[in-house]
Length: 116
Length: 116
Picture 1 (cartoon, helix red, strand yellow):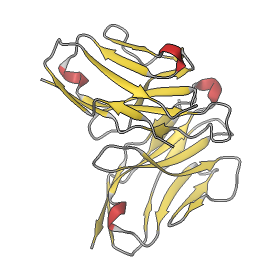
Picture 2 (tube, one colour):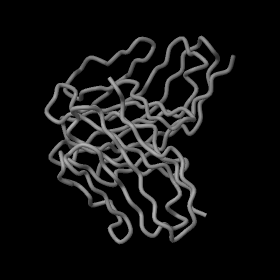
Picture 3 (cartoon, chains in turn red, blue):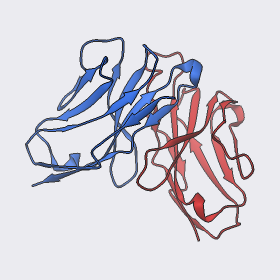
Picture 4 (cartoon, chains in turn purple, brown):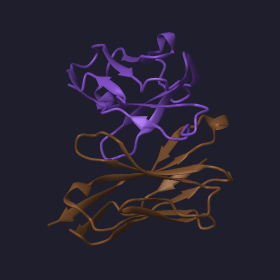
């Protein structure tokens, strides 16, 4: 079974430029999460999807961040415009809501963003 | 609000020896899940072990086991017969109930080094 796939793995951009990250969850997983991990800290939730609906986006800075999950599968997280403080690792995770292992979230390899 | 605390920023163990990583958490819930994740330099967050709060028996996965003390809100990870590949950052995580978002709340992490 393929794991969570994320791309790109690394991205370097200049401040004020837009950037987008893509995530493909584990097949059949209906719940998808985006986490932000700053250097030396644990990840923090940005947004959670159940199918195509964003059910928790309270921690997403909506002035510059946006996300979508069309058709309830792949998801894209966008930042526009990027700021220096956005330099971090962006992790995507998925889980199967209602399944026997619904409580376990499986993570992708992350996208490391550097804003210059 | 739920919180997770890992009081050991760094730990070191000799190869083949045993090491215990500490974690405490705070919650008013009675039914929840706890996890230990491993994050090597590649940044991939890998599930090590999980514990359901309603189970009194401590979870075990090969060389990894936990000491779950619900009343004390303590959840330590024991690694037996440590191997060089165990070197990584270890995160303790608490999962909020589904009706509160089902998100993971992570501790600050413990950097484990394994000496040959």
